[in-house]
Length: 272
Image 1 (spheres, rainbow, N blue to C red):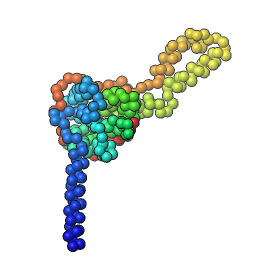
Image 2: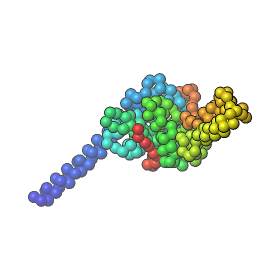
Image 3: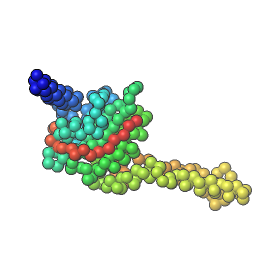
Image 4: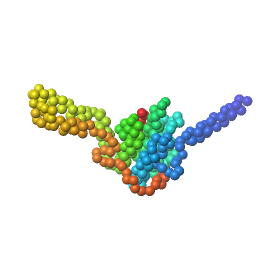
């Protein structure tokens, strides 16, 4: 009797395990048919925004074979965003087989009872070019500031431009990180330094009694010029670095399909 019970229990465990795996697999969306690089299952973007991103990413794929996919889902179905992204990237085969040059940007929108989630997962072949720390910086500098003001297209457009520039080798991950830290205000901002200088000049010239409403100091630098200098020193990071632009052209045909790329568990994400 005990032996029979043990066999039944073993069969029940096997049945549950197999069916659980099947259920979890079904929670990851199937590869789109016809294939697309921008897949919005949550209705977050407008049709024009989807088409604009699609043209950009298809053009980049056609010219480099690197595939950047954007997938927006309503729920992560209980998965951690990193795990979900890796499973989806593998299931769809984003990137080319062998070179594994795919990148997945996964987005789960914010709801009334849950945070928004985003994760960037590079394929095996791009982990050196876009390491985990850089994925996190792209999320922090390009995506989250726009997402927090409901500019989802702007965040995704900026992020894809940066990823494209990194993949092309227009600048390194280290250079991007330094640029992003400066423009995000980590360290002493240039604008703040200029503002302090203006205050000092105003105080000194005020003591001399030699300033008027047009010139801050007796030396005569116009107020409008000093203010414009302060404004230009603030810096902003909007999807390009050092004058490079990552935007793709709208030419080329439709997307031919994913190439069977693999993912190694790298990447980084954030919440808003």
